[in-house]
Length: 395
Image (cartoon, rainbow, N blue to C red; front, side, top):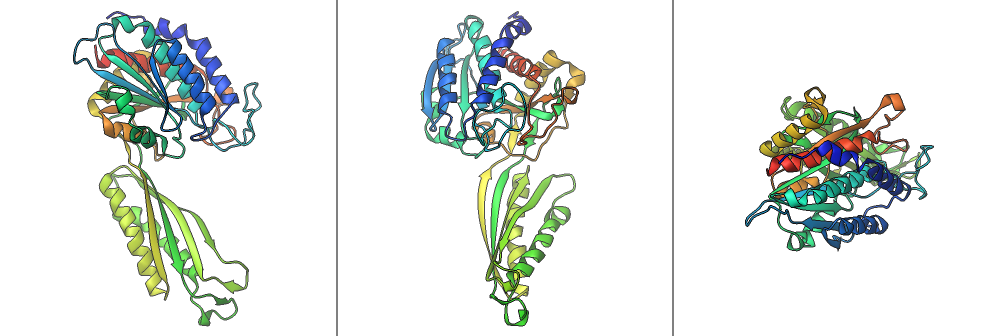
């Protein structure tokens, strides 16, 4: 199949930019993406996709059959997330958010534009395709709930079960023109823990009559940092962060309770389980030694995003065709989480990173920042890589 993918995508660039900027001005939070979903659904329908909306509350899927697909042909799933964040935008650009306290501060507006661009190109080529395509636009990634919501809402009874799944994340720490792709884990698991330290309250001037949970909590915070440094292999990567401590009401009162909340990130399932187990053991042991008690509440979130080696190899080949060998970043593992993991657990697939930063244009703020932005040249690169991957994956 000889197809000029670059030309197909180049013709779509103005529309992709316009879609991205419109969505950027009208961000919607997790499970509230009604306007966004309507735009996606209308565009997919216009492109000839069999479209289903309202899946997992606000998710959208579209399906087209390949014109040269025979019985038993493969089905490719391309996934994009669609929700914004509760951030007040500080950028002074003509397309800045018009919604107070809401912003596309992670690039999901770009993901939608890229997804719709890839959908348009594949639709234009559909008579030549020996495979089927499902476009999936997922809500509520920022709350790590949208992927499972769509799966539990039986999305794969509305569209064929995928033989492979691919997706991308725009990534501002990488310069536009770079693509990060590798087999194995690329994003970490994301879990939450809550530690409730219970002591005995009293007067701050007479600590001998009380059991201070704040002192116990402080000791626990320091001890938890030894789990990764002393119990996880140096060749592995993991993070334990205590993000909040709540306890006490006044400077001269010893509290009854202190509550610690934090997150665990890991790439290896055994490391993930070990860290959470040890958090409970260390915290309860320290608490007992200091005459208090501690109860662990663990909220397992999402598993790591793990790319299948064979699919990742195809994505890499497509990325090389798009940006050249010298612009491929293989050391691209990140400790953030993404519920794309649930789709990667459903079928062999690959999640990859498309560079979207450009310090020369002042685009270098981190994700989730009020100053976050993307170099829109990344839209072409993302869409082109998705389409090239599709054509290489099921030739």
